[in-house]
Image: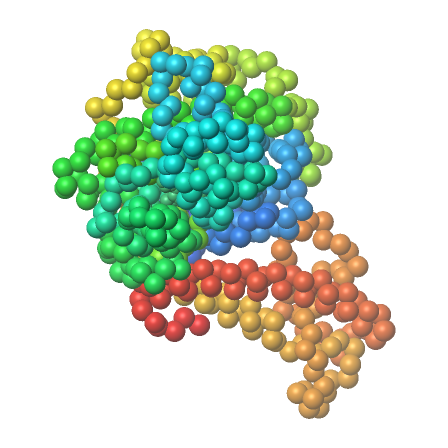
Length: 627
Ligand code: ADP
């Protein structure tokens, strides 16, 4: 049910916005439902002017740091958000690659959102992930954590591993601890095949993967965490099934054939046998399927997909809980506000022939590249719905400066605050609110059943306990012994995303938009501008210099913000210019440099977007010329 239908309090402002914005792209949250937040829509890619209004009206901004996702950039821009320079502090959303420095977290204002939690590396780094799960197993022996293959962290556990491999030649799979996209991975069955010094994770190779048409596959699932204290985990209903491109076999000759043993898209797209699906109406053809297509296929072949999904939920919840203590503590000490961070994790799950899911790894920055219609359909919703759940407040980020900075309570780390009853209530109601706008995500923790089963594994229990009591009064009892029992009532994971017909229309409109923007930028760059102060030339083509256009603002004044500025189409004419030619030339020179840098950045952005989406366009509609 739409939150705006049930919860909206008719303030004059809300009425005005509701009237203007059709379909609605503002939701109301907070204890009195008076805080407007943006409802992000994947359809925004169609350049719907209604959706654009929201960001423009509130002058909202985003910044990208070490992250090249054109999908995120396009979604935010399509909602009217402006991109600011990576060093600007005036932003509503910051989208970054791996969080290299946590100093940014302590200075955030209440409404600002960033797409990583501090210390998430305990999930993303393969050795730390394995160690944390192992520790949890040691602490909770009545729970099973055998969803991660037996592993050794080298060089620390070199001696133990050498003893094991002398008796059990595997094969074992060796991975550099901080790598991705299949880099540096090899299968081994002898110790001599690896270096003694490198930091590696060696895991038992799962030899009996479930095969479809003789091919190995894994599933990429998207897991959203909006808070670690209390812990709230969402799973996106749809995922991507990624196939290897050569028939599976374990013969010695094929041990090093990456197209047989690795299911990474980045590896298999280089294979001559990679099949891309050009038809956007088909989800179970080629080397990438949707997860629901896989579940339908398995169901048709007599497999119990409800139990499978329940086991996958079990894997995800336990994995996140293995990091909960560390991340909750780091968040308390580093974040100014408990809602500043959210994170979308990419879980890679392998299913074996006994329908047991194995957790291979957790990606902190799952790929949002859209090389096929299926990618766009899923990932655009993954991003848009995550931003909606997170609750991006409609606020002009420059207000934080105009009003003289943050208030004392805003700058205090959340750790220093003793939460009042009202604050706790706000947190709990906030979780309920989040669920109402969860879109394609399903909250898998806390849920009545999952709280009972996993509540006892949490380190930070008080707020979690109170939340569970708030959500499920009388029923929030944690079971002491929790051996795994499959859920009878798993949510409907076979649910489909919006119909494909709409998606196809979206590609067309989006690519048209991208082409138009690219054309505009090209024209902007190539436009000849008359140099002010020169005599009006009789022959324009001879005397015109190819310079950037003069902006209307005072040239000596620095912009108070790094927000991209709209270039003015004002042309200086010789007759009207009264200042000396030298001064004007100097001013032009400095503006030229600034504007060239700006235009360069804009055209790079546009070319990234075009490169990303033109391949989708070709796959969906053939070789029609894009630009
Ligand atoms: P990367 O971060 O480089 O992608 P992964 O841990 O995801 O590394 O492994 C890459 C691929 O290797 C997986 O997609 C999967 O196909 C295969 N793989 C990884 N670990 C195992 C394992 N223990 N057993 C079988 N296959 C594995």
